[in-house]
Image 1: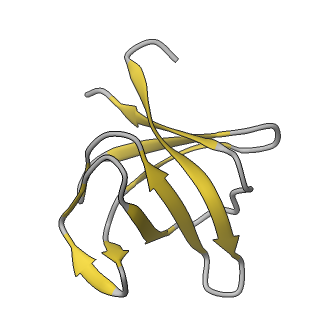
Image 2: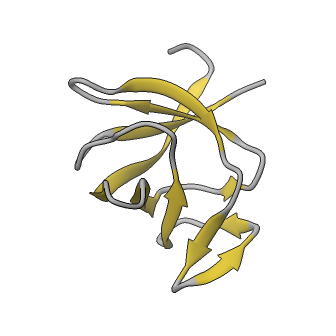
Length: 85
């Protein structure tokens, strides 16, 4: 999508708790809107909270591996884009 930058890739998805594990390629902050896009995935969701090593964090940087809760299912290797406001 125009105005979107790839910010992460899905490493894993835990369906029993609706948590996605991401490998971050930029900066993600609580409140950012993320666009999850893959072969059968396509939705936008706001980051309400995220964790790094089981601790709540407000921001994740390039190279971090984080977990965040999603409303929808995602799949391994889906791309994650930051939506520009």
